[in-house]
Amino acid sequence: MDLMFIGGGLLTVIFLIVIVFIILSFILSFVPVGLWISAISAGVKVGIFSLVGMRLRRVKPKRVIEPMIKGDKAGIKLSVNQLESHFLAGGNVDRVVDALIAAQRADINLTFERCAAIDLAGRDVLEAVQMSVNPKVIETPFIAGVAMDGIEVKAKARITVRANIERLVGGAGEDTIVARVGEGIVSTIGSSNKHSDVLENPDRISQTVLSKGLDSGTAFEILSIDIADVDIGKNIGADLQTEQAVADKNIAQAKAEERRAMAVAQEQEMKARVEEMRAKVVEAESKVPLAFAQALESGNIGVSEYYDLKNIEADTNMRDSINKMTDPTRSKDEE
Image (tube, rainbow, N blue to C red):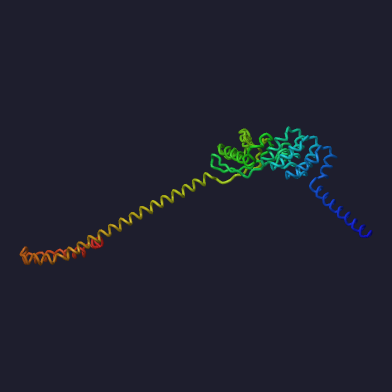
């Protein structure tokens, strides 16, 4: 009995130990005790119940506490509520804190609210701060313009820009800068009397473009515009004149073809009319013998008059034959 009692007591103790272990494992997995100890050791005051509340609000405590520790070590005082609210809004807390540290080191006046707004706007706030310290160079593709003498000139520019922190929210991006610079290059080349003027003074393009204030309304500040390369393209004026000449020739040929077709149609119409008249003449000639017969029968013409008419007709045919024999030119013309 004693052995059974001792064995039963041992099993109960083992069971209780397992239950306690499971409960402790659940508590430790839900309550980030290790993170809380790290925060306390780093001098960041955060309550254990605040970490539990983050769990309940579906906020990962590590995403909030570790950036807070990093900011505190850099001398930036941030509250748990600020970082947690930014995390819940969908922001990148770690990147915002890194941007604040970089701005502080570069002596740039950047508040947490402005930094969080830039991050929520979809821009890389850390890259923006780095670009404020180290300007970025944007290289445009070859941009073609046509001078007044009709020669195409191609220019490639390098734009040095610096991020404007105040205009990052709502400001236009790099594509707008490139488009505006391209428009300025085309306008400057187009206002040149000769393409050689552009080749001789390429800095005239950069000076003209830079004076137009192209960074207005953008998230950047243009520091300089440098022409990297200038090249000669096609003779656009000559090409246009050639194309115009070809077009004029095609139009003239089309009009000539139209006139020829009209002439052919008129000729065909005249031939049709002549054939119609010939048919009417043949039809009329076929009725002559019948008319003579009716005239003879009715007494409107005598037999002697009929033979006189035949003699005249035979005499006329004989004269025509003689004339054709003596005058070959006439016969050819009549044919």
